[in-house]
Image 1 (cartoon, helix red, strand yellow):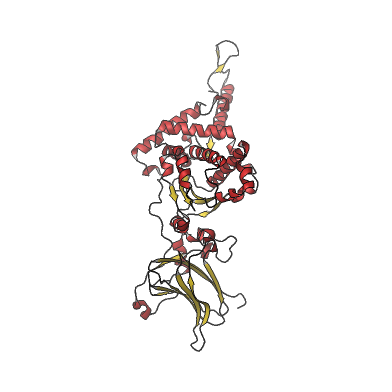
Image 2 (cartoon, rainbow, N blue to C red):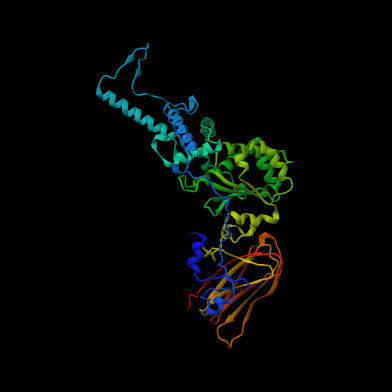
Length: 480
């Protein structure tokens, strides 16, 4: 469900107001006319985060021409059994002429039954060729007319700037590399639990791309470092593990026009071993080369976070091995800009708490239906108030909020509807200062013993505009 849709369904009357309130029920006539109001929104999307369309109708003329030419070359190579090296090809049988065992004399089929058997043999061989030549589960034979085949071929064309011969050669090399390395079996291999913390898939971005987190800091552990990079065999093991992760990510994609056909990569360099370590340099060169050459256009964006000073030296080292198209997908963020950068591409509810987002492991309080996070801009020197109705006695209200870069005052109180009751201080006014990202958003819980409402007040006393992100839910007691 889109963030905006979730907000509309769960909280249809929510209204944000600078120096005023965020109403969770219909505002009164006085409140409606009191001041300027602004709808809370999901975190703003990045306008530059776009990929090319795979629909044939959206391609430019030269792109259509290149795709047609590549498909023609591929069809001819498959039917001619010359796409892979000769020793890797299925045996060719043209089904029309049978060579005699001796001499050059040609032997014709003796009867119609033999001709039929020969035709069936040819059809079976044709089907074998088609089954063998698949890439990521997609048959490559163009005459089969699969839309996914076009999507795959367009990836190779874009990686080679629509130079047909170069794209065809790249495709051939990828197929040969996969055959020689038995890459299709890598998903079934076991690599041990140690590498599991070094990279994993977690959530999706705003465009639906699965997100892969690469945590290079785990290799600061010397024992794991040596076990991973210490020898040529260790590095080969590491590379196969990395290829497995890529294959798992591709399984989450929809390789059809209009589908999500690429991943978002997050590379966390906090505490990562630097390029002064020879083994790291070797492994990174090998990984960059293999992934770029054999998984074209499977990365929509490569975001590097917690970038240390030595990253620029490493980038200069790897730059000659990268295409300009790959370089254009790089986004770099120093530690102070990690959360802001990730929120440009990933919804706040999908960003893990250790990076300043709202996603916690095994969090049962906020499920998919009520996980959406809203955002309000708080102008310098102004205050925002959020009201959460708590009309049912014994209900539990849960809320989370975070202000990017903090430096604001925050308080929470429960105001009963009965004028004879007293206001309850849930959270005393407190100066919230910048803290480590690992702390995540503030989470509070309150059980009301009478009907009323919770009021959350965020006062921006700084001279800069702040971004407030929040969400809430109310659970009615089952005993009522």
